[in-house]
Image (cartoon, rainbow, N blue to C red):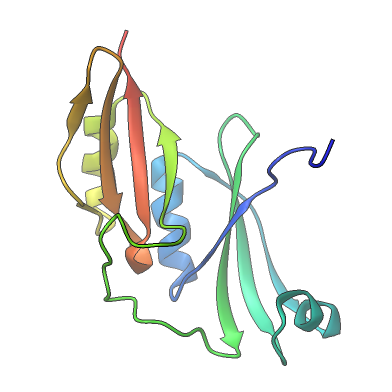
Amino acid sequence: MAIQRMDNVGIVVGDLDAAVAFFAELGMELEGKAQVEGPWADRTVGLDGVRCDIAMMRTPDGHSRLELAKYLSPAAIGDASHHPPHNTLGMHRVMFAVDDIEDVVARLRNHGAELVGELARYGDSYRLCYVRGPEGIIVALAEQLA
């Protein structure tokens, strides 16, 4: 077998506390925080002088994780105000199954989230939407219909 499991998805953020609060509101649990630095980190990510704060967020079932990272050195690059459309090449979203999609969207709006499009229904199977959260991260939500 080539892999055992997917361990986590890493997301670089500018405001670690805001990102933790956003994903906690979604229902993820803070597993822990740490600071990462040293030669091993430099070699792993291919940068010099790495120092970043990380927060590991876990889904309630314990099977999936997000690693949120705020780079202190070298400084993160990019334009957080840039909101590329969904068909932009590269990784651009993470999806979560939720019980009550309208409630989740309402709670996430208190953390600055905005709908990318609109809440839509996929046949008799799902209600779906994309929301843009901190740092422009697109979070897809899916509520399975009975």
